[in-house]
Length: 326
Ligand code: BT5
View 1 (tube, helix red, strand yellow):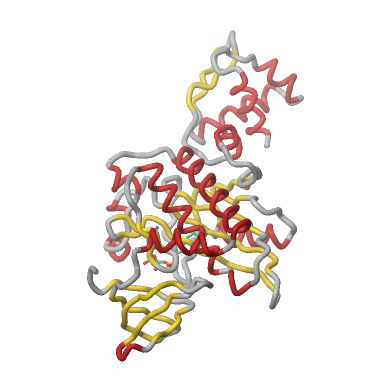
View 2 (view 1 turned 120 degrees about the horizontal axis):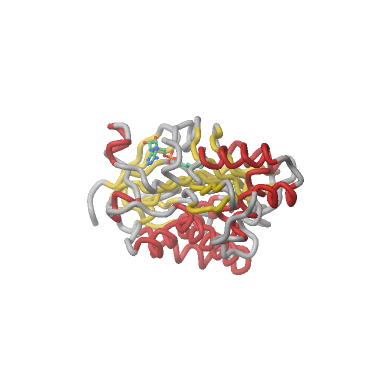
């Protein structure tokens, strides 16, 4: 908190030095406490010029995702107005779940610079090294029935794909249910967790991981074959803050559309992005393997598959592998 307040003061006078005395008077703490705060900020990557006569001046900020870095650039109306930032967490989804149980509001966001136990679906892991990527969870309290909860994943996939396209100019594809691909490799993944009764959702935790400045060689061999990052695809390092700003804007926009106008518009946008219709796929669902042609997504987000003999099957959860290009 104290470091955030120091930063706020330094930002208020970007070109002038601010004396230690002035800062200590305004924050009502000792000069030594200010000096310690400056050192802590420097270890986080803030470049702060210090002059014994004039005081302190902020030269450059690191690409951190702290509230004080994010708030000035956010363009959303309500999403991300409260950001809970951590240097390290087990999983942003677990933290957001706890916060939501304790009454956190819709739109509150949890961000971590790294995750010790980043989670994928079905007990899988999400590789989450520090500072390079985005690990984010958003608390949502949608007024929809629990059987429509999968549509939140589809909605978020559209928003993430739109954000990536706006930011990079590249054309991402969505792979059912929760992958965002660039050149057929996963650049982002979504993990939705819901807390509900039979007919009412208490909250949804929308977890998003986006690989941004990760180099290919940092992935393990196994993941390297299926994953990529924005940096790899764009050929240059990117500002995480700038991307986060667009991502939250797109999420707020698509979630609002979904809540106001219902599922049809979400399903249409999803179909336009997924290009899944008519593709030969192998689906693994609850241990069962199915091969067939993807026909569509159903109104609740389930995948409709036509298997051999023309039989139609609905798949509510699982993994898809594309068998050949259309
Ligand atoms: C996902 O699971 O794609 C969901 C990923 C969600 C991660 C976010 S980060 C913020 C929030 N907090 C969390 O704890 N999680 C969410 P799934 O479809 O099960 O894919 C997992 C598989 O993707 C793994 O088994 C790997 O093969 C691969 N993988 C792991 N880390 C990856 C990475 N960083 N980039 C691309 N692929 C990865």
